[in-house]
Image (tube, rainbow, N blue to C red):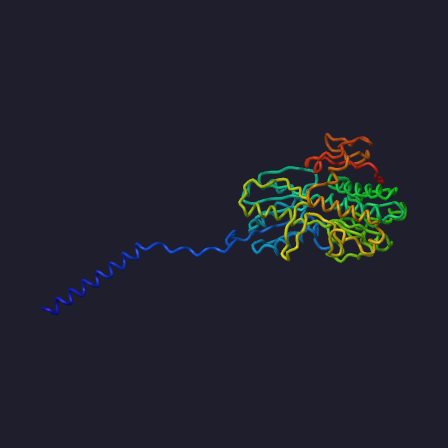
Length: 422
């Protein structure tokens, strides 16, 4: 009997201890979560940037610069992936875009206006995707259809200063694609630089422009480059086309060349600094970086007109800060980019002017298109409702800030002092 009571008490004590343990567990406070490292889990999935290139990438400065931008962003951010298609015409823009979206693309870019505009047709169909297209003159936007272009004219102005100092014949030539707002605006930046350099040095300089008819026509570009040299005594040559033919001619003829869109010596190894006096380098990654940041931030109404200049920058994977555009040559920037063979031929006042103007544009305190008056040459491209202003017409006074709309879609006339060859 005594043994039975002991067993019963032991059983009751065991039951009591089990119940108390359960109650303790139920009432215990929840464990504190482990703190996250700074920046951890800001993005929980990969952001895919898809670029549709209108041309081939290899051997071109335009698509080559866009391709480099995608690769640089992929290197700079662990969560960014870059994909692309080459030689995309307007009939393939939407099919390729939808294919890449189905594979996970978050941002889709058309790197030329004529083949990028069709993306607006599917913008509403994919509200969670950002679409982007380069601006040539059309400024159509939608909530998630973003238009973009860099202020390349800023670097072209600096190139013009260098070109003015280097010409000995007083003749500078431009092998150009065709009259358009984009082309004419860029040429005008270069023209202002040449004219300011000529005024400072007391030179008389003629600027000749001859159009090829398209962006990439190597044979025709070569022919025009040779014509400018042999018939117009040009000893400094530049281009608003995409092949390497004008550079080849400059190298063969032993004259100075001024490059466009990329550091053609440092990045592509085209020619050398015995021929290339300076180039301007376009960092499309700065514009795409802003789109990526707004996408990651969940911005439903992103900025739809991106027109960034030297005041905007991003930091690459190696820690290098790059501005949207800059003068560059053989992997050097700023006045250091001036060819070491050309530098002794350039008066110090021009070098100082290049340095000062560049620093002020980086600081956002000066801009050549604000500082200068726009006086029409009487040539250019007549737009619907916007005839070419008569020669000598002051379209914009000096020290008046031109609107982005004007620069991007209406600045279709040549500035006074240029000769357009038939």
